[in-house]
Image 1 (tube, rainbow, N blue to C red):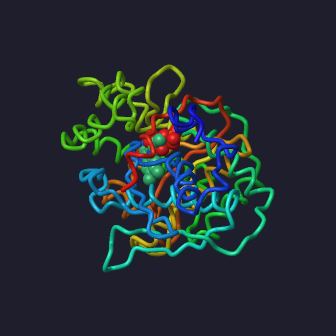
Image 2 (image 1 turned 90 degrees about the vertical axis):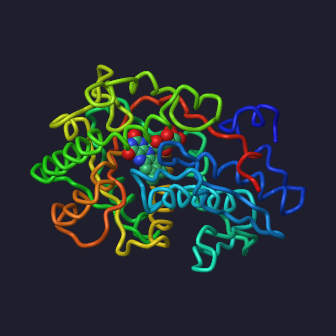
Length: 342
Ligand SMILES: Cc1cc2nc3c(=O)[nH]c(=O)nc-3n(C[C@H](O)[C@H](O)[C@H](O)COP(=O)(O)O)c2cc1C
């Protein structure tokens, strides 16, 4: 590990890969790519443990969001994204990894075990996705009106399917408007719940600068009554003047609106959806495309139940995403690797 990487988790470079060291040192290094994954409110709800020559990934439920995510669904999704980063890093740097997926009813927190697998050369797409890990960012800013080529969107849909999920594109105008209205409805329901506001404030807080998690840069937006009427771009996105998008702006400011979903609604399905998310975001980033989230309707039970009918498809919506082109935003904090290892 270089000194720069020791100070800044985003400064990881494959040049630092300890190829001559034992499997445990190598796996520990590769976990440095996993922690750069996106996670709900940047809670980084994962733990790693070396067990022999394998690395175990577990859910850290002490970082749960009991109000907005009572079943730990988004928590497990976040771990799935970290697992995809790890799988990709293993393909790039080590012999491709063997992955044993959990969770197991006897060990509900143990989500996956990865170890050495048969060697296989990474594809050019995988190399590009790997290179995109330190560049990937959630983009809550204004996105360019420039359309996203259909070929890229189809590619993202294929990747989601390969990981066991589906990506529905809300393309037709009535559907986009209906989805934007549902986002707005769920957003109001959440903003009106003091328990939700309190939970959000705990993670979008200045003090998070010292803990290496959460969203300290967005803290000025959520002080006092601002959480109901003010900017709060952390829950939607900046419409261009520091104010959060509302109503019709939700659809207008989202060149692509999409819903990631699964056939089942089990912890295994959430883990798969998380891997699909990790993979799609890295492919998107490798093509210069950014994403952000509009998850309110999947966090409020009533709107989540109405979403399949609105989309005209069966299954369980897991995340609402927007995609588009824009300028790179600054990175969010990460905890040092030592803090996430048992
Ligand atoms: C499962 C999941 C749910 C998320 N939900 C939201 C959300 O509703 N609104 C939002 O602005 N960002 C959301 N995010 C993005 C996180 O806030 C973001 O990943 C985190 O702050 C780390 O920043 P980064 O993605 O730029 O590394 C979500 C991420 C994940 C993985």
